[in-house]
Image (cartoon, rainbow, N blue to C red; front, top):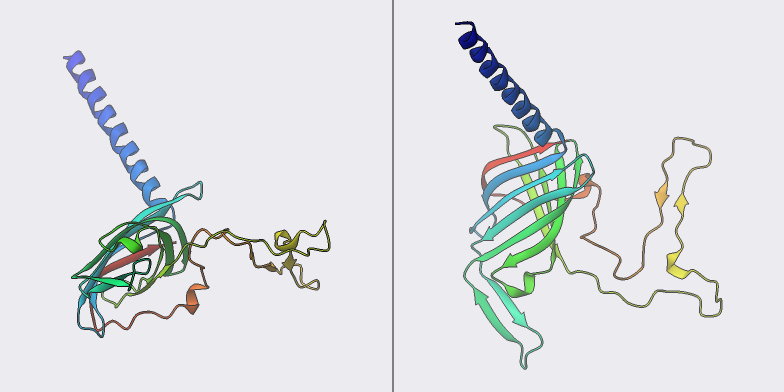
Length: 222
């Protein structure tokens, strides 16, 4: 009888440990900054569009995520290398991007990544940026997006008369010498081919799309 009781206690103890570890793992997964959502909407063109995305930044500062976008509006892909500029229409635009950056400011988030798959060939390899605003349950969430062409490498500006001139490689911070708390502003990097994603602006500067009819949910967790 004592053996049975001991076995039951051991089983309950193991179950308790599993439950605790599962809870800790779940908490760890949602503890970092994240943004996710599924949203279907209509703009002035009257055609349905949808976006599904998720992005999470772990304790190391590494962001992983994915974004899928669909648009009923037909797109035209122009072959600029062909003779006469051949154009090919698509009945519905689709693309899937791998997200690798995430910036959050209160209830807004901006995510960036690279298009990995699309039914319009020229979009594969482009950078994409998605900006969302989480206004809570029962409120109207907002979003906007854009595509950017990856920057090619090239000549680095420098003074040809000065061999020791670092040219565009020079960097500096502009700060207010009278304020110790001033974080300053870093110089702009103008080296071609050094950018890795669309330029990120302050989140308050993005104009959101004028949605006529939207449904779904967007969640932003700082």
